[in-house]
Amino acid sequence: MKPPGATLGVLGGGQLGRMLALEARRMGYRTIALDPTVDGPAGQFCDELIVGSFSDVDAAVRLAERSTVVTLETEHIALPVLQAVEALRPLYPGAAILGTIQDRLSQRRCLDSIGVPHTRYAEVTDAASLDVALARLGQPAILKTRRDGYDGKGQVAIRDAESLKAARALLHQQPCILEAFVPFEREISCIAARSLDGHFAAYPIAENIHRNHILHATIAPARISAETARNAEEVTRAIAEGLGFVGLLAVEFFVLPDGTLLVNEIAPRTHNSGHFTLGACATSQFEQQARCIMGLPLGETTLFSPAVMVNLLGDLWLDRTPEWELLLGLPNAHLHLYGKAQAKAGRKMGHLLLLGSDIDASLRTADEIVR
Ligand code: AMP
Image (tube, rainbow, N blue to C red):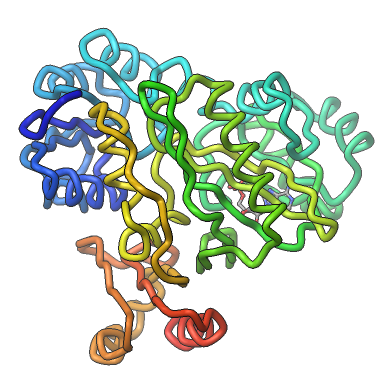
């Protein structure tokens, strides 16, 4: 166990790193982040910031030298950087796991080998293999870049001749996989942690509502049967154990109308759909991540109150100032802002956590705030 006073290094300095730094500092740890921007969300809260890109090995080595243990808030970090860090300090999760997860194709093959159900897919490398894959998986289908995709970026839904042309253009730029389109009833995620000594703890399953491929709101607990929730937790446990994962992870699922679960993707880090844990649960996902990597016992994951988390995107700022008095005047609402200087459409600027047993009322409030 690394006691308080040790230094937690984090690769990445966005909002996930910021909330990790907040929680880790509360627990008495020092924090240091690596990020390309000087005044980013985490840099404002860490004891130290190293400015460098996610492919800058020298900068990452400097971070590792000043850290006791290193973790990350984004999986989009160059493998040589991860390997250089791991050669110097414990890195959780490790470079080999991250290498597997960074590439959608190797992530899918890994899910195959663990034996959990996930979306049907095919590797595609050129127009000919795309045609073969489309014939097998049918239309609509979704072409996704193997690397660096998030919030719907690097994806094309193939439905007609025009979108097929766009898909071919994307494939020309980057290797991709094709996924069968899943006619899901809802999307859920399981936020869980696995400790150094192999203990596993999952939070109550969360339900996620996306708009334009970006998470709009999370409902906890998800409106699913106890059996579906248990299955999602067991699949997540199988993935964490199969990978030999240490740290905090999120597994996103599609739920079909008959309750069947299909894994959509794994995030090897804290997750936007786990923000409800900070304010609604005994231990936040960020404290849990710190506990995992510092070798502390895992915290309780009990949900104290049903919750709705709604993302506040930059769109809210574009033509007016958000109505702070209204937001802050809501009963049982907790505002989190990430300290980003510039608002842009689709950019995550903050979130609002609405606590209370009336989920429908919270969802209505969320929709009034974010129309
Ligand atoms: P991803 O970045 O892969 O998680 O995709 C972002 C969102 O796009 C998901 O949360 C779904 O709402 C939608 N999506 C992605 N893949 C599929 C699929 N195979 N079938 C249906 N919807 C999908």
